[in-house]
Image (cartoon, rainbow, N blue to C red):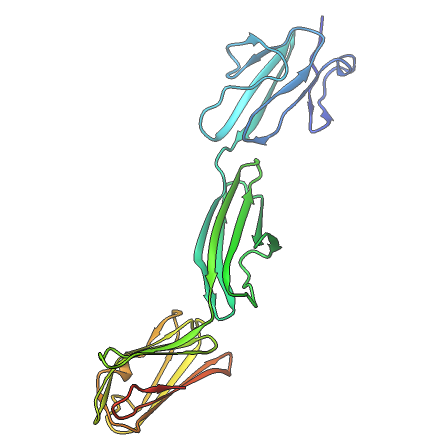
Length: 285
């Protein structure tokens, strides 16, 4: 009479010593492709439910449906065996909580990887390995490729690719008057953008926005001159784009100066000075 002896993760179960040299069973307890392998010098029967058996050969694939925990059953003459495994065919879910974006000469982003059986996550920037979720500094102008690859404990994999276009940061003033134009000067990030209407006697700022601002930056603005809607304005950046609407809408006399100071971690990181001029667009420096 033949005997079946079970080997799980290279450990022999407690079956008669005479049978250990004849039979063995192995499988993966977490898998996306369940396979049971075995050796025996007799006829082996397999079952998905422990009730209905049929003759089987190695390797044997249990019948499965949705992800979850399953049992399987083998028997070799009078020696029965059962085991369990977890089926996971769901790949990791990669989500960008902050899409890759240019911040001056750096690219920043944030992501999460969600999976029932976490494994490993790796990132590359232009084909070279890079820490995931860490700012990429000193980025040259042009198109760049970020690739995130995640593999879970069952071997399921997900790859996400993003292309980031990097350009030299700009401070731009757009004058909506027909006789006006666009004044664009290179500056370091963050940047400022304003629109205005002006005459010989006054200038009205229609919008004033700071862009590429680090969240948490302290912003102070002081307006000196005739027509200032506010003499002082203080706020903290909660987004990377900050509107200074409190300084717009009023007629500002020529010679009025608005000074905007940005400070992060106790240090001044950028200062903008807006000078109101007669018949011309405000000067941004």
